[in-house]
Length: 224
Image 1 (cartoon, helix red, strand yellow):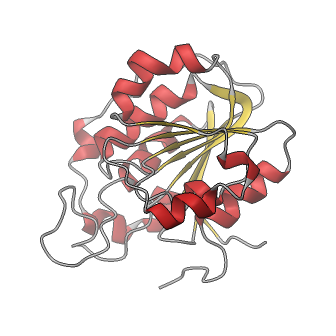
Image 2 (cartoon, rainbow, N blue to C red):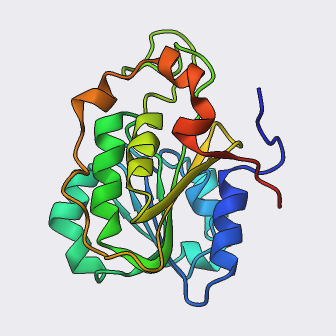
């Protein structure tokens, strides 16, 4: 399994944020806060309808200055963008947005589309779970057994890569696949209308991914 055992999502996110002053960060899919609390950003926002922080982890997180002013929203990402985002942040506010919510093609694509409006022109969106290594982990529904569920987020990466004139999109071979999305320098910031789920992409199978993994995901080795 070609994964980088040293670099994980938290390391990469902090690397990107270290290049920014007064950085602003949004995380979709916070869960227990393990990654969220470890991210270093001056302004931090988290979204998750079912987040739960252990008391010890929460107390420990307060030792990091950026966690004392963070804001959490207990709601779905769709609800956040519809009802809260415009009130708490400006368009083009975020340097970095991490998408690790519902691991489906439809929802991860919707999260990406919603996020683009609030991303700085030179900002980045990072997706988790983009490079599944078994058919069971890649199914669009949560498996019944004890399997690390990646879902079919990989289809969102494939979809976004169809718009190379607008976006640069690729996947690092680390931490179950870290997808990267950013605007191209000379591209219009208008979100193309084709960024809605397409039946031809939804119907792709894990066997299709296996045949053209490098082409579909734009795999790169992450060296830091």
